[in-house]
Image 1 (cartoon, rainbow, N blue to C red):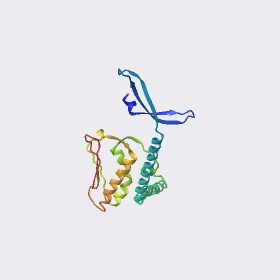
Image 2 (image 1 turned 120 degrees about the vertical axis):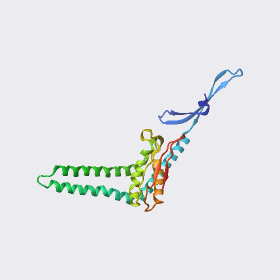
Image 3 (image 1 turned 90 degrees about the vertical axis):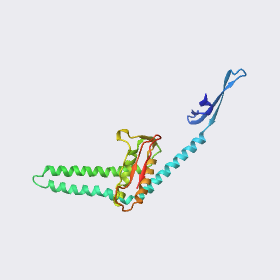
Amino acid sequence: VACLALGQALTLQRTDGSLLPVRLFASPLVGSERASQGWMASLHDTSAEHEAARVARERDELLQRTARLASLAEFASGIAHELNQPLAAIANYAAVADSVLSQDPPPRGKAEDAVARIGEEARRAGRIVQSLRGFIQKRQVEHRRHTVRSLLEEPLLLLEPLAQRLRVRIAVQASHGAEHEPEIDCDGGMIEQVLINLLRNALDARPGADGPGTHPTPPLDAVGVRVDVDD
């Protein structure tokens, strides 16, 4: 009864098959002797509210993607350098393998080692490309459960070239063990963007600095998870 008095969200279907979002309000009719004599109900069309929410959601998604592209442009040169490293290593190991296989008889162990290293570097380049694709692609706002460590993976990978160029080491310290790592319900993309901005600001504050670098620390307390970035 209380729920109906406050309004119950419903979706009705019109005769043409289209859907109509409404909110149902109902309250009991009570007679002079406080006996129930029926119900009074009304339907409120919430189409305009749903449309406004959809427009706001699309605007937020656009702003989020624009912020991601702007961040990507800022450290694109570092990412290109990071991607060139595994590609150059693949070319070098391929030359080694070609040289080894041209010997008679070819030393199988050296050839296998060169091929294995080519695979490692290819996977490394693939992780960088996959991270970039996931960072810039258009996506819908999606709330689900994440660990703080998983939310840090892409920001740390994307900022690693900049950190290396500035000679700063990024270290993650947690106040809990991996088996007790907390989860948070959030839009992972938006939280990753916030973490990138925080880490980037910390890196910019330490140009050419030596030492331990930045320390994102996600402690668990009574109300949730807190992430600190110390430079």
